[in-house]
Image (cartoon, rainbow, N blue to C red; front, top):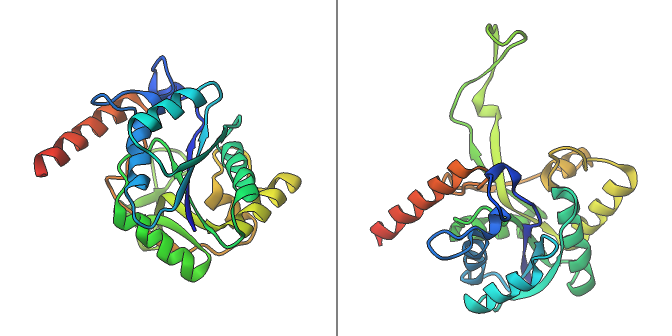
Amino acid sequence: MNIALVIAGGTGKRAQQEIPKQFINVYDKPILLYTLEGFQNHPEIDAIEVVCINGWHEILTAYTRQFSINKLQWITDGGETGQESIRNGVFDLYKHCKADDIIIIHDGIRPLIDKTVVSDCIRVCREYGNAVSSLPYNEQIFKTSDGITSTAYIPRETLRRVQTPQAYKLEKLYLSYKKAYEEEIGIHGSSYTNTMMVELGETLYFAAGSDKNIKITTADDIELFKALLYASKKEI
C-alpha cells in the first residue's frame, strides 16, 4: 500500500495566530484539510495517518467527516519536535502496516499538493527504496566569512532544494528512526527524515518538486496561499 503520513503536530508560533496554523481557516476550510484532500483525491494513495497536535484529535476527526476524508485511518499524537512527531507516526504505522508499504511523509502545512509530484515520489521510491521531492537551485550562492565580502561561490548545479513529500519503505523507515533515537543521530535542531537518513549513511534519490508547494510558516505565507488559491480558481 501507499500511505500518506501527514505531520500536523506543531503549534505554529511563527504564524502569530491564536490557534495552530494547520487549523487556520482559509476560505472556510482549515489549511490541513486542503492537504488531506490532496491525498484523498490521489488515486495511488490507499490510506492516511495524521500526526496531530495533542488536544485537537476530536476537532480533526470532525473536520475529516465534514470534508469526506474517508482515507484517514489513524491519528496519533505529535511530539515535542518535528522529528519526534514523524517518529511517532512511523512507530504507529509499524503496528498496522506491512514492511514494504511505501510511506509518503508530508507536512500538513504544505496544502498545495501536486498530483504529479506525489506520483513521481511513489515511482522513485518503488524503484530505489526512497524518494525526496526536490527542485534545482536557480540563484547563485556565495560563501562569506565577514558578511560583506566573498571570494568563493558554490556552483548551483551541485545544489538541490528539497521539500515534502518524501517517501520511504516502512521497514527502512522504522529501523532508521529506532537507530537514530538510540544513538542520537540526526534528531536534533531542524533535522528531518531526509537529513537523518544522510547522517545514517543512506543514499537519497530525488523526485520531482513544485514551486507552488509552499510551506506555511508565517502570516505572510497564509496570504500567499490565499493568492495562489484565488489564482487557481480563476484558471478553472
